[in-house]
Length: 326
Image (cartoon, rainbow, N blue to C red):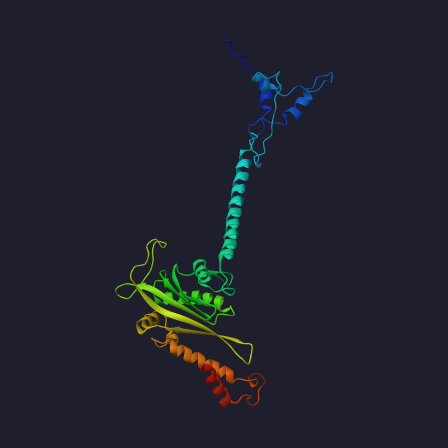
């Protein structure tokens, strides 16, 4: 192999004249230096690579392309579009997932509303079971009920609805009380909006262990509550219509709470003593109270709105009321 001829001083000077202050080949060399070395016949400047570095590398007669790379550019210098493809795929996946979740929620809400019984339109054994099983619409959402329930009565002819539920999710008596009050209110209001329903009874049961403590399900309901089934309390809603006015009066009574349960709740919150009603209240007591309220409504006349002396004779009203009760 033949040794290369060493460069002369002029060639070394010309070689390093193509480098800038950082030691990198200056792309502007071809525009600044080569223009000064054009041929006299005006045929133009030599091709790129004809300088000393090109001659040193043996590229004097081969065209050379120079590409300026912007380090701040987001484009891949190699021209690859893989990054853009990955970005578009990731964005598409997020958008598709979000649309799927929203779509499932909309479909689920529509299905629930189609399958939820409206007790204000019809009260039967089947519609009440459907309402307790699927929940009732309450406010801006749905109110769910315990999975274990029975429909004791549901008759538009008598105007009575009575159900019994067993709470297996609450951890103590206070939670049973508060959860049942919300659930019972939603159920009773939905039913009492029916013109043929005047009384709703919501019986609440729970399972207790040997010490009388509330037993609840665990592990997301996979392990059911164990213990003896015990009635905790009962919510009774009644609807009264006034003969003198167009008002509709709704009354709530909470019965069946014994001393043990009351003491347990009072230890958890000291604001429920006024809710305790004597245990063992009979159906006759409830009917007597209802008759007394109906009599009070019958005694009212237009004076309740306009003022003045009573329009009705109390003795005559009581006599007619007793005759109607016979």
